[in-house]
Length: 167
Length: 169
Image 1 (cartoon, rainbow over the protein chains, first blue to last red):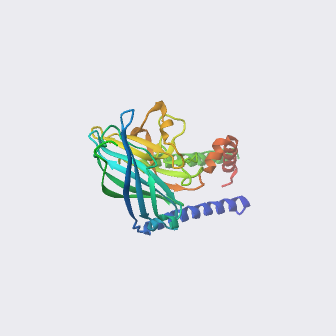
Image 2: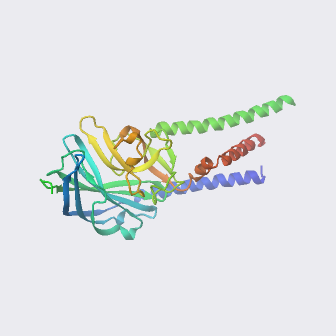
Image 3: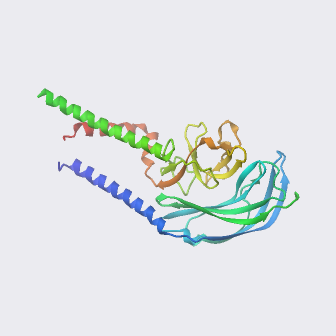
């Protein structure tokens, strides 16, 4: 009853249980955090806007993205993954979401930033619906913890539109 | 003398059976609750680094909500091993409410089009097995070691079996 084997077993079980409990508490502490992120995206230029050989519309644009996401970080945050997506609807599709740019913020100090960039991923439609199209730009963030539950949310910015003609 | 020995042996066998049965019940119960065929998966590749590293485990949950961009999903379109990547494009049809989906690993430069079986351009919603909602680091590394060096799995299992049988209760 007091052999080495039993003692080791009891110790290990206890240690693992405590570890699991600490991970759970760490994750729960994230719920106490009330984030207040802010962001602004400006479309500086439509670089080109064409119909591809396969028939789909494609547009290349340059954006100015500025954001303050410092309030998302807690001690249990490993990184925050952010991406900007264009959201619009077409006659065939009730919703289209196309990711244009993403980044990984590894620490709180990098969470307040300003970047001037063209779209990292191609903005291609399923069809030819983009001329004169009104769309929203959404900044999504995904808080990835050191342990536990992940949080995701987004900020929707409306009022953007594409040119009426190809260029 | 003999009957007590038999009784002891039966007792050990039943205890072992109980352990295995309760483990199975917990696993199947988790499958029901999370709505996912595999409620816990081990990350096998580095394509989602630095967020998820090889050996981390992910907790999955599948709800009826439509798939939206940004979600980290596990999909299996008929491959050997399911893939855990992020959704970067969604095109949801008005009429059928089904969506064409494109995924990409955070650490990859290219999207997953080359990976989709039967050279599909889009991933269909039915192949998505679950969404990642929680995460624990390093814990899954044991599984990776046991898969890549099966010897260790046999050693561990036989040692465990031996322990249960020889323990004096």
